[in-house]
Image (cartoon, rainbow, N blue to C red; front, side):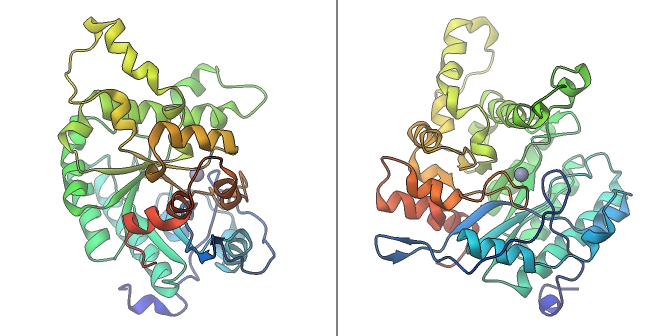
Amino acid sequence: MSAQEGKTGATAGVAFVGCDGKATPAAQGRRREVVVNGRRVRTVDVHAHCAIPEAKAMVGEPMEPALLMSTPADRLRAMDEQGIDVEALSINPFWYTVDRDVARDLIRLQNEKLAEVCAAMPDRFVAFATVALQHPDLAVEQVEEGVKKFGLRGVSTGGSVNGMELADPKLHPFWAKVEQLGVLVFIHPQGTDELEESGRLNGNGVLTNTIGNPLETTIALSHLIFEGTLDRFPGLKICAAHAGGFLPSYAGRSDQGCLTFPDRCTGQLKHKPTEYVRQLYYDNIIFTPEGMRHLVAETGPGQVVMGTDYPYPWTKTSVDLILATPGLSDADRVAILGGTAAKLLGIKT
Ligand SMILES: [Zn+2]
């Protein structure tokens, strides 16, 4: 089915879930209109999850029966209540171990269904294409089809691909295609399996997520910098989940490492590592105004976009966090609330 054909009833088969794959209860409330200095701002959430039950079923991924009955109504209510005008939907990869033929069918179905959701409610949803990065040449075709045929606005990836780093030279054709298409790449971590296997993240405090997820993002971005991927493909537009993990909070150490241990740095970068940090984009899932202030100080106000992690209940106040961050101009707030993401995702403002 094409995106056009999906205009009516297109969302019946779509379930919206959180990072952990669980559904959340309905939110209540009227639509909040976000205004900065008298100007209505069209807000954009770049970090919002969903799943396609039919795609999960293809590889036997469990999906609770209740999810199959889900509709976007609960999500729209939550968006309205939180002041989110547009969500950029993404799907966390569960297909990175799947063989080529299944991956081809799964991704096509998934991208088609994502396009149907967006076509049914074009003023509220855009989506990132999904790709089978474990088959890089296939992923090249899939991102092109996702963007050109299905009208998806970017592409989402995990922080690694079944043990392979995003900076692996095998993925150079993918990065070249994404750079050529000029679309945004949203990197969402899947945790650090290696640490989970060792048991170091066991125990109280859900450390597999609070530490494991931002750590994977930190590792992924650091390799993209230090392996020269960002030098090789300077036009890439990459947005990292969870405020870029730990990288922007401790970026100075990345500059200092090669000065301290030059023998361990075999590749020559065109810029200082922190200069790449200022090229990347980050969502604002960092919870405190001081965290936001520091993120903006390290990366620049034009590099931060809004994220909620919906429907996983990490935060319901991403808009308020931007409004409460000290030191931002009105133009900065408008950009972070939606202006920058709208440009990156081709959303009309
Ligand atoms: Zn998430």
